Image (cartoon, rainbow, N blue to C red; front, side):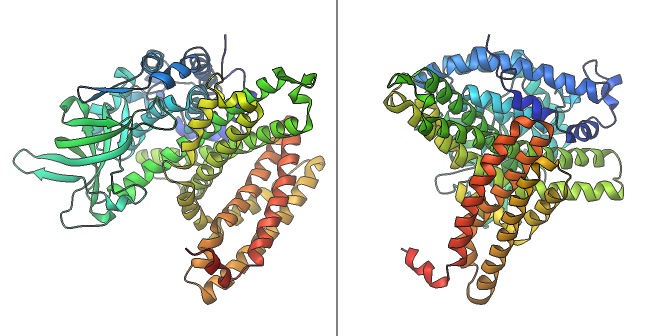
Amino acid sequence: MANFYLDNNDLKFHLSHPLMKKIITLKERGFIDKNKFDYAPLDVEDASDSYDKVLEIVGEICGNIIEPNAESVDAEGPEVINDHVKYARGTQENYDVLVKAGMIGMSLPRKYSGLNFPVVPYVMAAEMVSRADGSFANIWGLQDCAETIHEFASEEIKEEYLPRFANEGATAAMDLTEPDAGSDLQAVQLKATYNTKKRQWYLNGVKRFITNGDADIALVLARSEEGTTDGRGLSLYLYDKKDDAVKVRRIEHKLGIVGSPTCELVFKNAPAILIGQRRLGLIKYVMSLMNGARLGIGAQSVGISEAAYREAYAFAKERIQFGKPIIKFPAVYQMLTDMKVKLQAERSLLYETARFVDIYKAYNLVAEERALEKHEKQEQKKYQRLAEIYTPLLKLISSEYCNQIAYDSLQIHGGSGFMKDYPIERIYRDARITSIYEGTSQLQVVAAIRGVTTTSFLKHIRVYEAKEIPVDLEYLRRILIEMTNEYEKTITFVETINDKESDNEFLEFHARRLVEMVGNIIMGYLLTYDSTRDSEYKYSAEIFIKKAYAENKEKANYIQNSNLRDLGIFKQ
């Protein structure tokens, strides 16, 4: 029987990272739940064992149910019946099995019937689900909306709605975008009005491109302040499908992720509950929600990359041309190795980011029970800052790598890959959306460039640089130090011209190159330090760093030989 956890040593490797002990201790708050819940862990080892067992269950479901259903789900797709969504048969089967196995509400506290899992094992489950079926990952992964409810809603709301995820298998959706408000969420116009007599909020308007739009519980961004036109007039609301006041007008016909219903919704006097405070919907709550979603797309990208790589590897071993398997030809085995190296690099970045998120969010929970000590506050702020700059970097790089790996996998399949006879045709289509939704790659650059201009990335790279390392890996660090010095020199060059002659245009023009340079350095260090725990990563680190060195040299050379006059050549 297939098991997507047991057949992937990288997952257990990242689950055993040294920081996990700290994460578990913080998340379990001194293991205070052990006397309240019979399934709560007694110590770090017990918690680790629990994660391991649950991930094995998820891996088995992914390998034996979700992945075998993927092709039929892609062919059948969801449909609208009587203004509501009906999932494809395989989608419903997938979800029912995961609900029965207790895999909904994994990260929620136990008092809300959750498993109280940290982000890292939850993201691992998301990666495996994505490997099995990228479209289904969108439906299962939206349980992350529960985290936003848990973080910002009142206790009364939490007690009513959060247990429904684990106990009823409630589905979730983020109702954010509209026909005229895609990336620019400040333009949202869905209207929220308050009826003082009924003491009830009502929503009216249209939402578009809503993933899993007919979900049981939806978080809806709406304009609560009449006369406003920007983000300060938006609030966040919870809509319960049981009220039956939202109709699905249609499901979009998409290139990929067909099994995931992308809906156009019509709200007509839909009763809703305000989450948190008015006017903070976009600037606080949705930004937090989107960061969680972007981490989820990172997991989805890595999972799809894993699927694409495995399909290519299996095909290359079996396909005979000119009397031997094509995996024996340098042009093919070089592609496969590059795919594997990119996959390991993006995965290391994924779990580094997840660890940063885990630590700062765990401190937030501790702060609800007691005042944080000075060193704890400093750590909380440190990891929150790191999570804020790493999340857009992760989303950018993992989604772009996902597309590259899927592209190369289909290329290795040759003409066969273009046919629906092989899974790579579906995987290739599913990959394309990862660099578009939840913020395009271009918007991730805008978010990540702050870590460049504030030197936050550079400061943390220097932390990596200062770590102890075995002598046999020192040559890799020397290359990375040279890359870092080149990167720092390039930033200085850009900032000098930007300050003197440009209204940020020169920086914006080179932003993606700068962000990709820093990503190459960070992933190079992550793979190098992975090698200190497992020598299997050494060759991947060496291959990645040598290529990254050449790429960064090219980018630095281009930037340092450009000037403001060059920008005019590109303007349309």
